[in-house]
Length: 553
Image 1 (cartoon, rainbow, N blue to C red):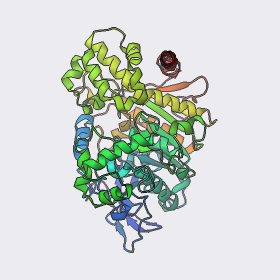
Image 2: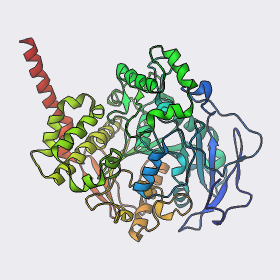
Image 3: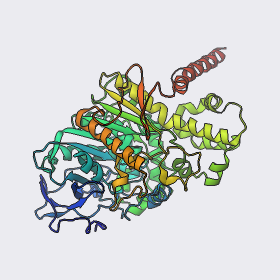
Image 4: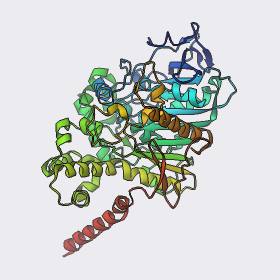
């Protein structure tokens, strides 16, 4: 059961809301720094439990219930290795409850202003959690602060992860992308049920970070989600990041064959393989992911969720037409991701040598895809001929961050801009003060650091605590970010009273540098982006032409 809220003004009877499937009873709590209360409803099912024949199948609508459903307990997380959650808690220094895991995990949590009425038509903000598509969960986040401060409904959803979320045979027996289909089902549930919670089904904004940002960008490309949301925010993640979506069927089948073999099933016959995988226990299914850092089952171009390769959808300007916020942090590979890559903190502090970089690049070959053949061009651009271990460290992690996050995000922003709808780009630059003693000085704004500000971390004091020692300037920054995000949810434009002007990302490519003081920038990382968009392709084309000449001789 939920802990830590009974003394915070909880209504002994709890708020009750009638959904299409039955009534739910939640909890009322107060938010620090404001006199506004919030109603929370936890663990509402948006689909049937994906068990038995529903494993590796599209989600189905939930069964209705007759009694008033208790919505005061956290739902279990989807099947994952909880050591990943422990690592996040340790490195990010966030306090979150202890969770169980279960295959029965298709639930969502809702946070609404306490005084909301059924027909208030508040903007709805649906958050999709990150975790490399293999870990994470809805209850690691608390939507109460942004709901209270900005008068919006917040919905936080779960989706199947890892093998259960993305296993594919490459044919009709198991097309894959189950996790993305779960997200579509959650958005359909919101359309059908958010009005009794005071929300407007015609004003739904999806937002997510890391794998959640990837998911948001993916939903913007799928015909299945068209009309289910109206604005989108991708934080540090987009669908064209390397290794996320496998467009090559043979490669995807090879990866999934290895996963099936690991669980004791043979993928030679698709129907038999799916039948075998459905008989496996949760423990057996999880086995390939007990080292969650090493194995990711990619999403696939399945002809259902993705009609074609994501980059082709973007370049053909066929994405769902919605306003977009896209952004990155200024040190995406500062700390948490390198440690997750098994690089020791001592090595990070002392720097890297070129031999270490070579071995790291070999490990990263699947992420680089076809570019791995041309890695020497990229290394020359970023590392030059330096032998300084600190410079090598900084240059290497800038390079990988640009490959994984920065260039894909800029490309995605450009593609969406070219559809004619407004795009807003940002770089988050503030290093949270809570890490002054736990992270070395060279770490700036790490992957995920913006989340505590987007969710009003300085004002959370219940079960999820991002920081309990924020400075006054950081409290103001958090209010600013909540305002930007909620303005965008209301109007498709983050600008409004009390916040610095955020320019639209047009042909001039202006963007916002978000820190304790906001500043406008122009042509983000222009020289590096020129390398990726022009210089590198020209070098690759020249090299390929030379190879062709030699072959013809």
